[in-house]
Length: 267
Length: 267
Image (cartoon, rainbow over all chains, first blue to last red; front, top):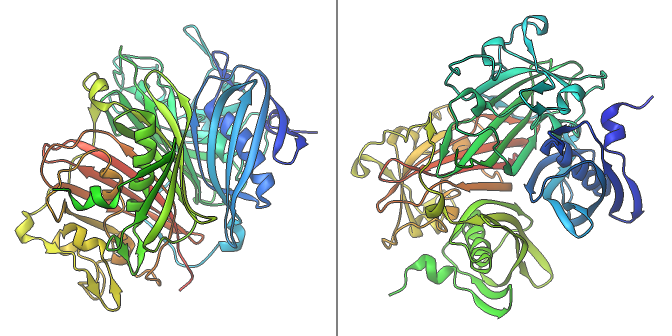
């Protein structure tokens, strides 16, 4: 049996570094593929060609929306070093580029241990059964992704639940694949973009904040179990916003950090 | 009269998107160019070719150290959109690639205003004359950069000043060009890597934390005057560390946010 995520990121090699693939339906918001899913698709091709097991730092610039359908995924080696392999990647549909990526890949297990320092803590979430499940349909928005990855919000952070809105651009919650697939370092590239924008909990005069750029740092190999996530925006100004994310595993280890810059269209 | 930064980032176009340039001496740590200086060199070529005045989100992967000497800087347009132009860039010396960059460029003045939200505040620094000036020489380390950009640390954050070390990976301070050059959005790419690593204020068993990847978000056009900076590391684990930076102008506006991932060599 194959899990949904692995089906949806299947790559068929055409030549070295060139893969045929499909943006699968159901990993979308209103028909366009989620940015984390696209990042995982490109990241998989880059990782496989790098010969290293883990994305370490991966940055994508989003160039065009990606409805379901065939794509070409490309990967190329920029530099093969002892500890890290730096790769470029892209997703194309015909002559239209959807995504352009740069990333360094490595082996987290091989560098584990050593000096550690930590001032962060995972969110102290209520048990899943006391959280508010993310729903796939809301006021004309169809969130296919919410049926692939289950998100359970801390009740007071659940977006669109409160009027007036909570006033703080913060969403914490649990995340788990709907079909029970365990998380690995590749699938964390999906998780860092799997929750709704936390600015939906403030009075932002738009329902659409398209990602310009997303960088994910993969910091650990996730232990089995659901992930604890915190996403937050500190500053919206001059038509742009940042969104930061932290993802912890069931052992309390930070496994991913992310930051994206998004456009804030005029309301 | 030309300022040092403009001299040190001078580009001579050889053909479209290909520039001859030099890594100038004196923008280094122990003979290797500072990462922010290299980012500004590549960012300038990318910005100029993009036709837009401001870097918006720029990510560099560092591939090899850059001692002073001739280089080729390349820039290429990935996508020219209405609001943003997405570019790639690189710095090469002979057949060796030093830096690979992706970035989106735009016009911050044109998108200024609109909805704003801010939970961050600039560091409440003592006046410059009560701060501790960064010195260019210390125990066998020669920091040429410290003579190009003056950094004045909050006294209790000044690295290497206290034994035992303060124990918190945080450095706040002022930054200003030594020759009085005003800051613009391009030079913020230098500033986001111009302070010493804040992990030098904790008992990290290494004096060298090479940057793998650095992403800068330019969030505003700096008002005249020195910049207030805060750099901090939250988590060192599995042989890697993150370092975040925030840079504010004299009007209290956040003008840059940065995050880098760096290697933590075994002590």
